[in-house]
Image 1 (cartoon, rainbow, N blue to C red):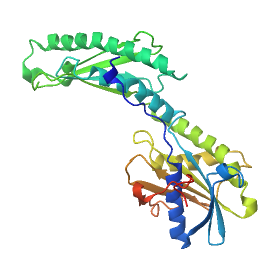
Image 2: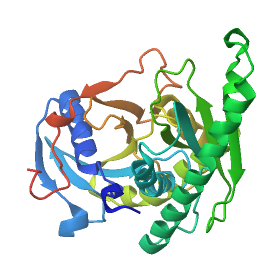
Image 3: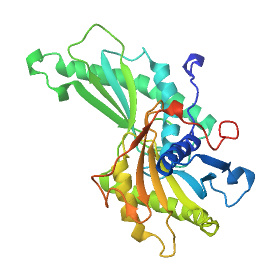
Image 4: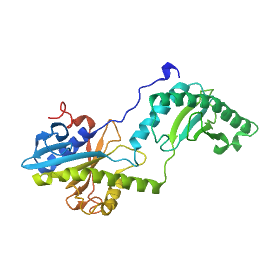
Length: 323
């Protein structure tokens, strides 16, 4: 691919430090106490490896964070997908026939086994070559079918066509869809986008439940180790997904998953959900559990969120930002 087409690869980023700060701010507001004696057991070895320990007055708190995805590997597959297609879109900018909109459609998890940088570069070259060959065929075929039709007879479906194939080197089928802009406004180049097929609601419901159960099996025993010291245990769930996840479905999935967990698994005293989909904020924090009360099941009318400016939060898990 052309050198100018290369862009910086996206990577999975963690918000755990700022997400934990949002929760601590809520705890401070509720208790009227200020955080003290902040420790980071995963770094300083001051106890079982949770994100944070601190005190609010005489009460100790142990806090653990985890990212909740709509399905396993959602974040990784999203980053992998963008790293594959973004350079291709950049490469073909201004090259495709237009005026038209082209869309690449992939399965939800195109590469379950992952990709090396060398493999990805080869796939990008093959994908760009395939698009260059197929886009004119789609564009010309649509124009030919429309040529003798009066403008008033044009329907949206008349302006669309697509090709589904396995480009060279791909083990999965890829669809290239073309939609001609009508009426045309000059000969602007074709615009290329990319997307993945959304799974069914039933698939997502089962996948989300499995992901929450796995998080509980992993995080709850770590937190429970602090009960003997009198600490109040807090689990913080983070979501970073505008399309497949929202606070309501996570809350309902958590409630529906509790009876599927081992009978001897002790849930944390408190569970919170922080929605970080807006990178620049605001972020919203939702209570999911406090003691024996679950939201929204126990008090839907009183279920509300607290909003935070991202710039107002500090990274409590960092030894430089945290106090």
